[in-house]
Image (cartoon, rainbow, N blue to C red; front, side):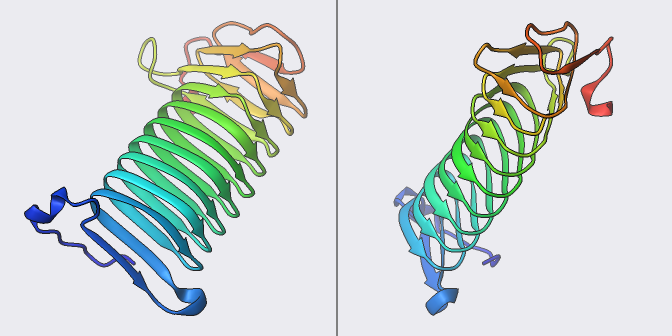
Length: 219
């Protein structure tokens, strides 16, 4: 699925420059690329979508890869999810791990494996079954994270450390480091959670350490 796709300029105005299905039976996979790569897909194998605007929905038996300026997907993925774009929105389910890289992202999904996120701004809903590693400027955590978290802020104030808003459920604690950390009344914290920030957030159920001008990336 990694072969090079070449599109004629005249074809760039079509909804999808190329769409192909390869393989047979359980190995049947799909690939779409173009200015607009938009399609409902139902394959037992892998699927890959790339373009300026990507809309991928349906069922993918193994891995799903998405890349574009604007990426939207509501899919049930049996394997791993990789999504990259200026704006990424994913709703659905992932049977394996999820890796998200975006300027702005919204994730509302059931993910059984581990989740890694790098973003300028992220809103996180849904139910994450594994470990969460997240690095972003502004993070709004509203869902359930069943594994330990490693959340680090960047990109605000003096150029780093960011802001975290927590109103969801952390089932195994972990680490949150950001210049600003806000823990809402609806937040539920279990396990050992260490919060490192400029000022101690309101609430209890966590340990606190002052950031004291340090960089979260180096802690």
